[in-house]
Length: 131
View (tube, rainbow, N blue to C red):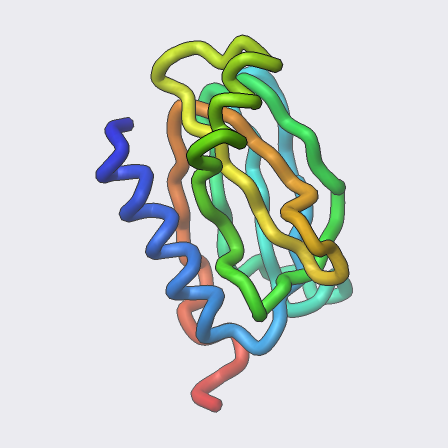
């Protein structure tokens, strides 16, 4: 994926979650080809509202379960000195993007996923009804 497509998917995710009152997230599947992060309005609720698929993961450091922090964008790309640090430390290969995900009760993003693509699927456009 090119950077425009990546930014488009990030915007789609953040815009959707901006409209949500809350959301519980978890890593649903993780293997050498994909990391699937899914969110739903409550962990006791069976149906997911959003799936975020990170293709061809290179690195992951994450909680298994977390809650949406609605005071910050959910996902963003690591840039600047932090990006340089991660590229050097983890020998990130060209073509990969460094994603950071915010979570409730954490000052800094506790979730870091490095992969070469991201795809978002909105499964429920109005998880809280029309309110």
